[in-house]
Length: 207
Image (cartoon, rainbow, N blue to C red; front, side, top):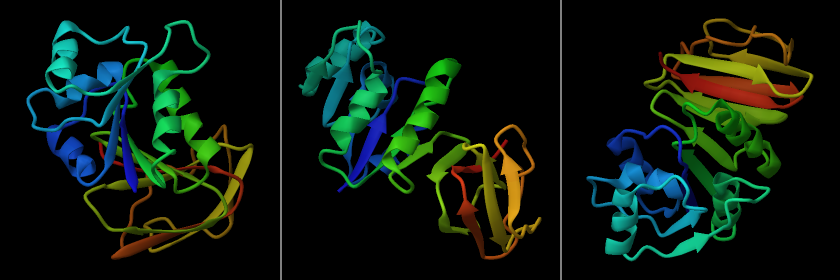
């Protein structure tokens, strides 16, 4: 089963939410309920300490009788971490929406948390980006609405090659402190990125 976790960051567009809700088990973090206002979409579960949900959100949850899992505000994990752990009890892979925004600590934490589940397990999506955590392997991408595709190292270094890209690389090693892998473009029907060593993120994006 595929899963969807809707975090409490910047709200995403309704069509994006609808696309990923389809045939998915949906868990919402408390303040993320704002994404569902004005839609006929309802999450299967809402979790959190409920410190960032407004009165409209509380009314929405009550009206739709959404099951909840409540945690104390003083805890050593975030609502998003709790939602991901619960989602993986039922799902094989998860899309994470509304996980970026004004709180850079939460944005970075959400990105780094993807690594604990391994490549291909969690994909972070917002209105401008799709982000995948990667380790050694071959990753194929279709030419899409995204203009750019970038590779960013998470480990001290990452070595990768490309095929079908505007700027081709052959066993290029990048460090976590440099940005040589950003702003590439797929120029064929498909583009391939092969990670030879290290770990990091592949980011498809638009301005």
